[in-house]
Length: 529
Image (cartoon, rainbow, N blue to C red; front, side, top):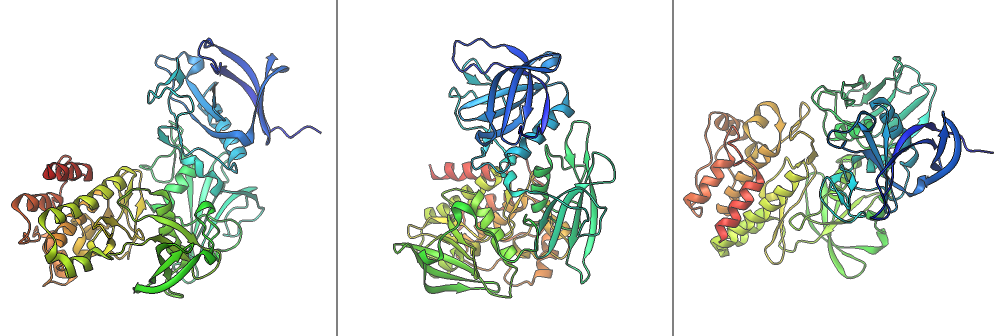
């Protein structure tokens, strides 16, 4: 019995040029998509003729739009690509709705694939190179982040009745956790979708429905100024940013309420390989233990105190660390999530917290070492800025010092991924007042610029050897004085040049590029020469 056809239609196909001497040509083919493969045929007025090729679904690593060629003819204005093995199949739809339909059908088929690409090439492979980045190897890694590589986090299931009390629908995509449930579903308007969100912040819960809109360019949005190429990309953004919603969307899951985090593939460690040695410190929500992993590697193990914090919130920090890799960020080794307490296992930084180290050993440090500490943090923050993450809690207390005095940024519990370099926090969110920029104090608006402000305060901490900023004022008085234009004084160990950098971080309005971490990083490099 033949497989059920998911989609069928005529597309223009570009020759794959598997050999350098192969000519580039274009031919119409009849394409048939099933759950197992995409096959294409010669055709006569839409009727299937000889089979010309097949791409197995399990071998597809990426499907994405391609930038059209300059002055492309009308029949080649809507290209898309299918990457598989070391090949790329370039196809052309008749119009944008047709291309979108093909992409969504293909993504639904491949979303469970084991090896989806993290990046893709937005330009064609032509005459032995990619037009987007100039790379000359056809199997070269992509140059653009592919958000849809996380499609396996999204699942489709059938339902006749919405558990949130919304309009019944045939297909729903569910996401749940301890505080928030959300899903997107068919709305009463044909061809449209709605995000339905249940927040448990109140006793009886609050339900909101948000129509997913599509603009003239085919971009999806819930809020007018946040546009996305696909619904999964939009959902991913709103997991980190409320941006006009009742609350931000939380961790995706399927079916019943969240009770324990699921395993995280290559990041999941065997609990039997992790031995607890001694407590290094504790706070309001968590405990950090020194441990040994696999009998030989010293590690730090962060555990949540039972009943003090949602495990959902706790594991979010690890999920952010999974996405970030840099020598000046504390490195994640893995997690233990199969039972409680949950472990976040990171590299062990033997000299502990930067703030404590400055207080206890600061007088032993020379000016070049203080500058290097600032450079280390700046390098890490320039990376976060480039990756479109904002830290929101940068301070000496949240940096760690290695045995060779390398400083690394840690504590990503408040970090957020942003597309437009801005994150407006929900009402009632706590934030560190003495490290906060005026726009945070006034509107709880965070950005890379507010991280730069906090970095200026961190520099002040370094050059004052761990003193408390605004030590004679409470938070209310600090907020008042900062909004009036007052700034921290110059520490005794800071030169005039270093203090000018601090003050540049504290400009209330960004001045050209001087408030970017990349600019600051190059300044510090030049200061060392």
